[in-house]
Amino acid sequence: MKNYSIVIVEDHRLLSEAIAGVIDNFNQFNVSYQCKNGKDLIEKFNQNRTYPDIVLMDINMPVMNGIETTKWLSKNHPEVNVHALTVDEDENTILKMIQAGAKGYLIKDIDKKTLEIALLKIINTGFYHSNIAIDALVNSVTGKSTSKEILKESEKEFLKLLCTEFTYKEIANKMCLSPKTIDGYRDNLFVKLNVKNRIGLVMYAIKHKIYVP
Amino acid sequence: MKNYSIVIVEDHRLLSEAIAGVIDNFNQFNVSYQCKNGKDLIEKFNQNRTYPDIVLMDINMPVMNGIETTKWLSKNHPEVNVHALTVDEDENTILKMIQAGAKGYLIKDIDKKTLEIALLKIINTGFYHSNIAIDALVNSVTGKSTSKEILKESEKEFLKLLCTEFTYKEIANKMCLSPKTIDGYRDNLFVKLNVKNRIGLVMYAIKHKIYVP
DNA sequence: TCGAACTACAGGAAAAACACCTTTTTAAAA
DNA sequence: TTTTAAAAAGGTGTTTTTCCTGTAGTTCGA
Image 1 (cartoon, rainbow over the protein chains, first blue to last red):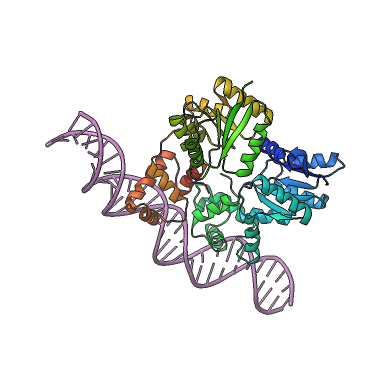
Image 2: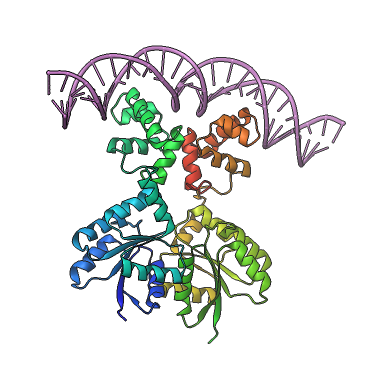
């Protein structure tokens, strides 16, 4: 029976070690090494000449996050199975990871047995998705998707300012635009993001990590 | 050499099992059982007649959170060492846990070795705190504390509703109060929390985890 | 080169939010 | 029972936000 190697990319050390411990107990799998973030992973990849079968990737990390790292891996080591392992992300993040090349999406709220089954399925079929990821995919296909990449830079900039105590007039000033243009930005976003007022926009910005409180 | 028993209270199954795995490898410690939340813990405590030496407690959990559970333990089983084990909480939450009776505060970003050292220190001295907890304590003593317990329940309830797209009139309805009373609540909070508008209140609520997006 | 689509911007009106100040209720203390 | 303080509610006026509709300039592809 072949032994498959796994690399964990996760910034919380205890969690990382703990998951490694769980996986090392599976008899078909072993953890080669652990990385604190994407940059760390790239360094280790560049100095080793042997690559793992599966990379388990956290999404929120300092220095270099899961999405960027996954993109790098898809480009430079497409033979490696990247799988997201995270707590509770929104649909958008899940889709971004999948677009970036992740072959699967696991939520951390699974038990040992399920993790083992998931890893085996990844090896055999190339993918495994927790239900939440399936939902996101279905929604994106059926067009119910919350939003793909509809936001322009100026709108993101605007959303960030919305999350402060500035009035629209002040925001217009900061962005060097007429207050009436700002009105337009806002009204567009109301329709695009399907919210009724500024609070709705603020919540959107926070949930999608455009503004981090 | 005595063997100390530990109970883990943590809602994410994988994480919970993983930590349990790490701890079971320490030769002076073993995990008696794991609980999904505070309610679960109380049930297990009530049916067992033997209690653990240490309880490792997550703070954010559904059903019954870490603070409430810690209060219950301090009252009903003061001989049990409760220790918070969590990711990154604000000063307020740390202080609340300590007030509730937690003997220590560990951040999840520690490595295996440190966890073992921490557990030993807990057994021997009764406490262990990650640096972040020390900071919070020092700040609270030196009066720099962000905010103690200035908010009443009704105000927290109001803050939660503020974070939605409801208008003040609708909020008044939900709270069964006159819109004018709601105006008063808002104006009070503006002064108390030193913000200018609803956005400021929303940000306060989020930063202090009164509302979780 | 024509029009479709997009961006910046305006006017105006109605609704909601904000400010300030007063009065009534309620509940507890003296 | 009177006093007092806090909570709830009312009045009035200003500012900001929201909602419409509409125009001028630009870009870009057919």
